[in-house]
Image (tube, rainbow, N blue to C red; front, side):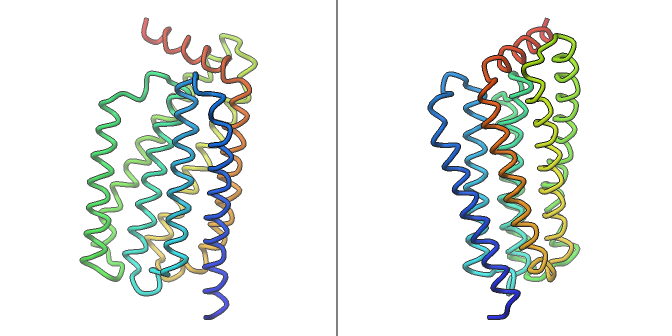
Length: 248
């Protein structure tokens, strides 16, 4: 096994272990916040995406799909990234807008994910090597991310302005880390999937940097949402008051 392969596999294993440790830390402190439904749900969705990323990393590391089936590796990567995008939308947008996650949105996003999975993997089985046609189904992921990034930033802009005008100073930190978290997730998710799609032969060289960088990004998000627990009561009251004003 060459040095690049060893670094590639080792970085993925380290990333998987780190994700599982972070997921366990969130799970261990979750009981305290059960009465705060929206915040508790955000923690649960964060745990879910950390676990799925860890499983994805381990599959890549153990089977090295990328060496013999580039489109299958891309389909696997985009599958857990798409799930991560859904977890972010369902977990974090409601922290800003408690009325966001409805049954209609849950069904819609689930259907989109199902369509995406079918397209990602059908493309992988039809084309073993990356072609312009094999990349077309990935538009489902990119359009989903772009659409919901717009929703997040619009919601963030409205809520952050209201929090300032309503003088909820004790949750100002929460507002700042929410934007930083979204910036990091959008960049990390879209950039890595784009690299996977466009440069399938180079990803083994880029993956160690991206995986280890991802540990830092996820650690920041886990740290931030844990800190949110310190102001969860005030933040919940503030966002619920804003939602009530918008519904009036």
